[in-house]
Length: 418
Image (cartoon, rainbow, N blue to C red):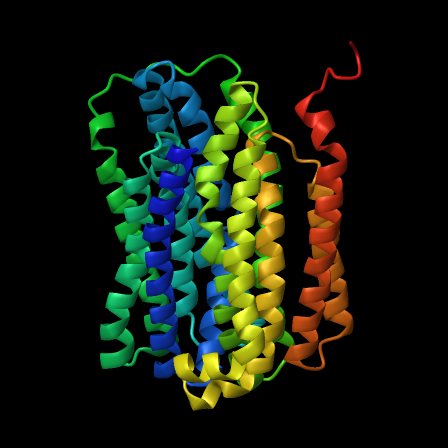
């Protein structure tokens, strides 16, 4: 448990250092653009996340199988690395072709006048196909210092470049998107660098049935992760589509700050995931690590949501300036929703690591509920925010009930057949 806490501390410091730079970037972008431009940028940014949501499972898949292969020696780890890089490069080329061919559809949906930000988005999606491969292997090898540094470098470089392209050159939406692309390049480069000792190792063939096992696990992970990313980003896209540009800009401001309640504690889950994989392989429940992670998540996410609920307008005014203070009430609602989603996500990640995906029916129902409620109630951005809160509340209650009712059966599958 001492090792678990130490790893959590390393990840918490490094990854949340990256989160600090993320918010410094958002502050810079918010102060360098009009509310309408800022709303357009964050709608594009959320579209990037949604489009690349299936790729968010790649680090976890790589971590899961890397951890297992490492017990047998680094030869199979090297074989996995080579195979994964080749596949990801082919997929990146296909993504570029699709993005440049059909990007105009996204431009029209978001009411944009320029294709350049969409082309940059396409490049970001393509790069996000490659970068998770080395990053996930660092997690699986439990090289959390390299894992954290490479992850934090993305946000750090995005902020540094924004001082040039947004503050000095005033490049607006296109400049903000380009900053994100530069950050992704640095993250991928560092991750590959931290694996340099792996390159000279002679690759060994992957075991029989490996591709089938990966396919089954990846499919379940993709569906689950897409649903989570939709819950975390679909509201921004819908507000941009249904509401005026000024109102969408205010919502984007509140959403960016409110998501601290989700992303702040969520960095700890990379350690929980690895612990849960290891504990299952050892025939243990790993429940102690789960409850500790859940407690830390509630403390960090809930604490931030409480601050936002008490002093939302002050928080927005200090960080974004007087022109955004009207986003205060939105921040109070969104931060509460994100804190609840962060708590549910702990149970999601623990179950994913142990290969249990029965909770996905709760996720799917929650997203469908939010989409329906938002479609019926979108007169104002606050209506959409409230629909998000109601939907996430349902997800947390239903997930907790499912977990408590089934955890004993899943931990002891032979218990009833003695």
